[in-house]
Length: 368
Image (tube, rainbow, N blue to C red; front, side, top):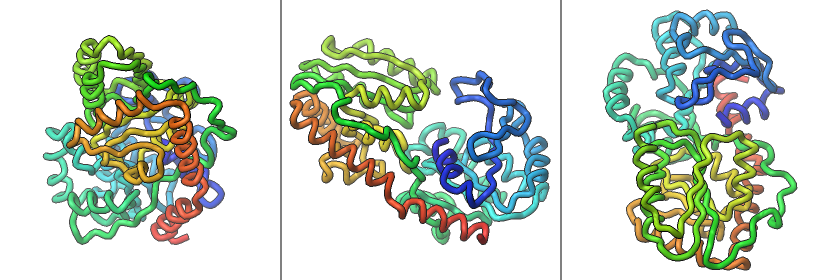
């Protein structure tokens, strides 16, 4: 998770980080990492990292790891991660020392995220609340909206601290608008880059594109196929798109490959059902890609800054009109939007208040 990478990068001079995570990329790729050792500590960047095989993510395995480290505090990402739940169970049973715990939901509690796999999440939450699994935590929200999500699910009297997700120190240093492909009125290169699952809502984008039968559109779909059934639905709709739309299914790529693809496209689209931050949107802006996203992100101001559009998912016709305007846009118009997009990203990356907010959370939790 980039939030973890950036946390370590920015605060390793103050804190010693021990990261416990799984030894594979995602739910769609269980191949173990080959550059690190599974089942032992590795020095990675500014942290010590322990990579667990899927079958080892148990309370019995996590408990001795935590007791070996004797941490001053624990920082958890996600509400539903198996690793997080297993640690909280060990904590609830008194198997690990009672120490401060920060929990960042990372978008897990948005209404859209809760609708995904609701058959599993919705029965779990009341049981977890009754069992006290999430009691006594310091909640970290990325935005005021996420604060409300936390209160709605876990109690209106909670007082989460707000700290925007930490961006990297820089993205594409030395970027120039000259690196973008020429934009010709009547055509565009569009990229969707995210996990392929219901929350990211690729199907919605395909449905909107199906209404555009004029102009040349190249759509690149980049990301791991984490929901095979959902991807099957998307693939069938791709097959029925108008002939003026060419689709390139790229799959999962590395971070640097992703930045290269963003640079090689004109626009970025993500009709997500909900995000607490969305690193890929910041990366798209840094790559000079004006963004077309749902209103359920922190980038609702983007149209005012002339760097994209935040369009309600309840207005599919508006999505079609925005996408058509992207096709029709000429080079001069596009370059103005692209420059604005890059400028917003640089401003965000340089904002000292973002790091200061996270520092305040850590100091409040761990008493530094």
